[in-house]
Image (cartoon, rainbow, N blue to C red; front, side, top):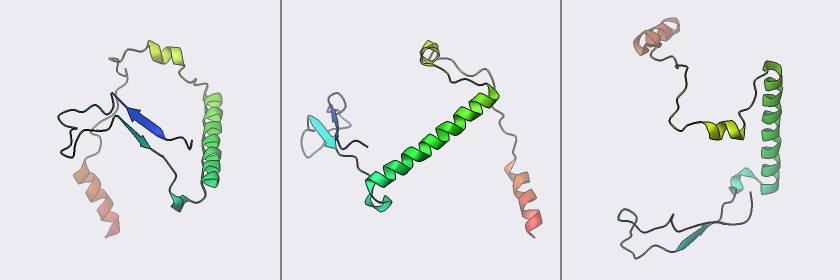
Length: 110
């Protein structure tokens, strides 16, 4: 994490009817320092562990992609997609009936 505070200004803080305050106008800009909670331990150690874990998952996925031959969708392909497109495949739905599933689970417990 960068020690640099994040700053949000106009148009994010434009005063609107739902965002106006009875305490007065909103500020032109707002800074919010993002820090790691002290409960996690020293920031340097937490960030090092996070980097290691992310790297491990990235290596796992790269190995899996090599094994299966599946490729990562590139920038051009992502940008070429229409925002109105939807998947061609259909996700299975309504295959589990809660009443039956609940009875089936409860039977062995008796």
